[in-house]
Amino acid sequence: MADTIQKPKTLTTPRRAFVKRNGKKLMRWVAGFQGRQSRVPDTPVISNTHFDFLEAFEHHWSVIEQEAQEVLKYRDAIPGFQEISPDQYRLAKGQNWKTFILFGFGKRLMKNTQLTPQTATLLEQVPNLQSAMFSILAPGYHIPAHKGVTKGVLRCHVGLIVPRESEKCRIRIHEEIVSWAPGKVFVFDDTFEHEVWNETDEERVILLFDFDRPMKLPARILNTIMLQVLKLTAFYQEPKKNLETAEDRLEKAIREVDARLERAGQP
Image (cartoon, rainbow, N blue to C red; front, top):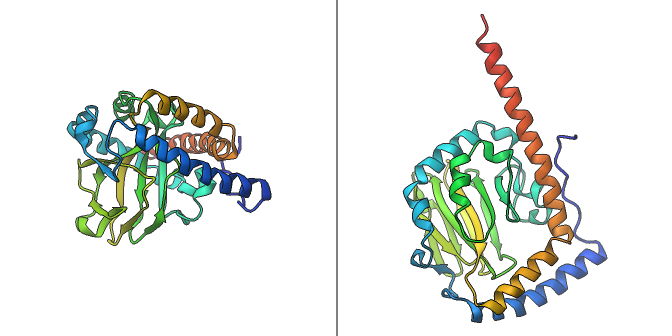
């Protein structure tokens, strides 16, 4: 199997442009409905008190950080975000924003999580988990302002490896500014405009995961239908294919490192 990740394709083809343009109009209507049906506040940042399962991440963040350090040993095999999801080409350039995927579209990536068994166990306790990854941001990088796709999914950040000048490494969510800290956990609605800065000379690593927003039954049904429809589109199929390739590339990198260590140990 080829060990290079599928490169981003242009988004200017007529059919894809049509889907994207009209999809945005539909999602704006859906977002209003989901906001009215939400069982938690429809605000940019949402208090942790609404999510009991977050306590486990606050208590065990150092274990997650240790497993992230293990993943970073294979840094060169970790793809840029745009290599996994071509539609992120505007946000992720080169290798400035790397993502190590643990769960994608609700499914655990077994090869990747061989390095992160305890983190994977914690994530499996999250109700209606959609995706999870280690998000690795290079020194000096800025992720431009953007918005997420659906209000039916909320996003959580768990601080792991954070620059010492934490005030220079931050995220703006609508009008709120949040800086990361080791062990700090917060939830936000990524359909509000947000952008990220790392104005330091150090790398930032967090655990990022998405889960279904608690909503009343009509909105939950609509959310399920929309996610199923999304899985039929290129916006799902391309990342899925690239995830498989990325896992294979990591597996190859682990074998190569282990072989080098074995040779180095020989007399």
